[in-house]
Image 1: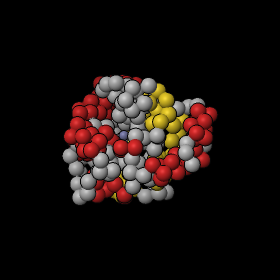
Image 2 (image 1 turned 180 degrees about the horizontal axis):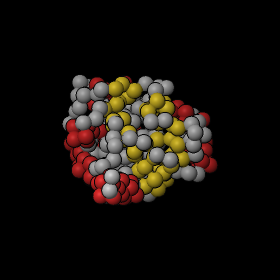
Image 3 (image 1 turned 180 degrees about the vertical axis):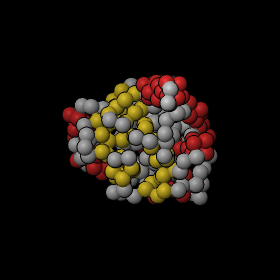
Image 4 (image 1 turned 90 degrees about the horizontal axis):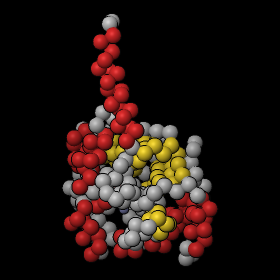
Length: 242
Ligand SMILES: [Zn+2]
């Protein structure tokens, strides 16, 4: 075999690395994709070859460009809201991969039930950001495993909402159980998800406490930058209404 036989593979791996460098590495085999604008608005993560969430329908081409040459086995959602399911259909069809969705949110994802809560705010968000409905190939349940992460049912924001937790280095990808920026100003800080987008705030607070009990080392949110300071999380939870 002469040296030219290696060229295509070398080029492919360089391109692969370059693409990966474009993303933000959070932990071993965990990356955050670039947001279009502004930073950390609708976060999407890649864990090994699984995409966690799919932002809005306007993000499809940016996400597909970033994921070009990167192996993908499935898209897995934290929950079915317009800013998390928007690019699902385009990514699943373009990359010919299945969709995994928490069981309690499947009917919404497939268009057999409305997204919840059924507030005007959700309807407006749907008009602005939601992608088409799409059939779910894998139903996610508490205790399932995806790419080394455990699926943990964290209901409240939606009935099916899940987070993903990796025991070995205590990385948590928490969707909208809580957020690390203000929903209007975008200023960094911990907040509960807005009431108008949350089905059951009491239940969501129980899910926040479930997260804290796991003693995560890195928390990756659906909205806002990563959190490494767990004392901040403890202080936030101590102030929550019981
Ligand atoms: Zn969200």
